[in-house]
Image 1: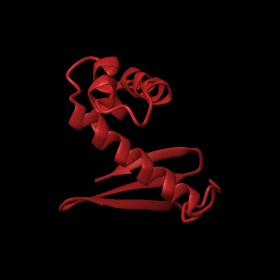
Image 2: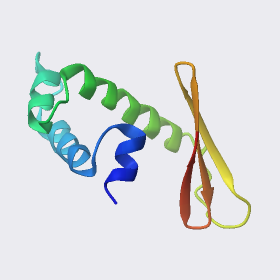
Image 3: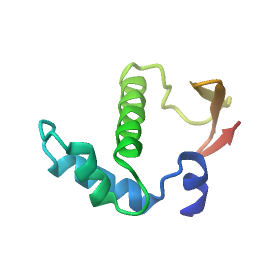
Length: 102
């Protein structure tokens, strides 16, 4: 279960949970915030890695809150696409399953 999402994001489920906890406890005004969060996540994540992961999280939240993501599952498949530099990624949503389409 843990390997599929890590292939997509480079972050394991455990790393994501540690990241979420670190975001909750490390003050936004702390000068070395990203270094502290990286240390809390552990592993090989750098301050730059966690800051980039935070930006992706914010973009995901903005997309969800914008109402552009139709949360109804079932019927016709729906695509959610985004670009990362020169690469385009898509999620294909079907019924209760989510499939990644590169």
